[in-house]
Length: 388
Image (cartoon, rainbow, N blue to C red; front, side):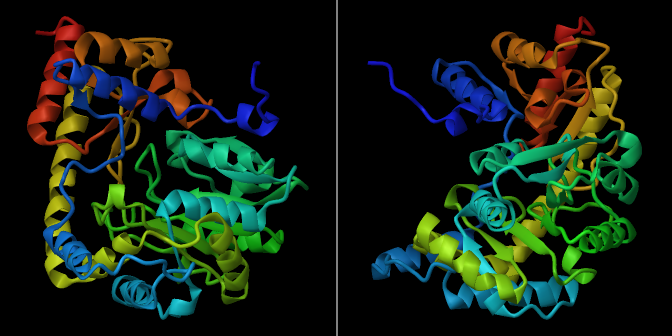
């Protein structure tokens, strides 16, 4: 018998970067030397102080369920991080520890969006945002953005595209796939426009800490009613630990905790206790050194891509991605990326993963690999284009 699946599940599209990652792993296993520039996963190992904290807990054997909102010491540590980084006094009560940033986004969409409603999102944007909304029988309201708008929503775009069914707006700064940031003035103006329409504002701050020219600016510095989602995966380099957090208005915490109880039971216990060491001075010194390495990689990759004829309309201000225009090379970057993987053993992600606006022209290159590997990828691209 053929199984009958829900319409909801059939509306969910594949995550193209993960499809490429799967095939790249198969090529690795077959003995090919693949340069991995497809995933947003730091190549650095988890910082040693975090690993030590995890091993200490394992030796004690204390792996039990925790409260659904996370252990109190970690919620306190995150609150202290907001004081240290942004000068904000955030009560630990407002912080919900989550199983990665993805579960945080799912919980917030579930809290703020009913079936048939829309959430406004910049196109291009992180792929899973669209799928999470569809999973809830809501709709992503994709708004085309270009380099002229820094690939971000602004007040004019919000006013032009707001509809009766719009429940709120999701922003990301720094953003995936472009590395673009929102300046404080634009962020404050957007927050005011959303409030005036009775909508909800979520800001993805998952790449905070990885801003290269100017410090990261949190929406909570201009709008205490906004929802923030963050993660230990990017700046803190804990991708496989599946740990993140939400900062929410106090009145919404009981509802979020109820969702967490039912969707997650609790965040991973080992990861939570390990993350207590993520904010130690010893760890932060390691992370800042790695941040400097990312910036050097960014500069090397941007320079190399431009020399090959790629256009990089906007220098990434943060995160660890370059969103490059390859329209002089192909009118179908989806097929082109698969060809690069199979024939040149370079794994990168097509623009189709991130939306539909000019997606056939763009490729995202992740610089989460070392300078030698970036140079190798550039040499292979030169060979591909007959420039060697």
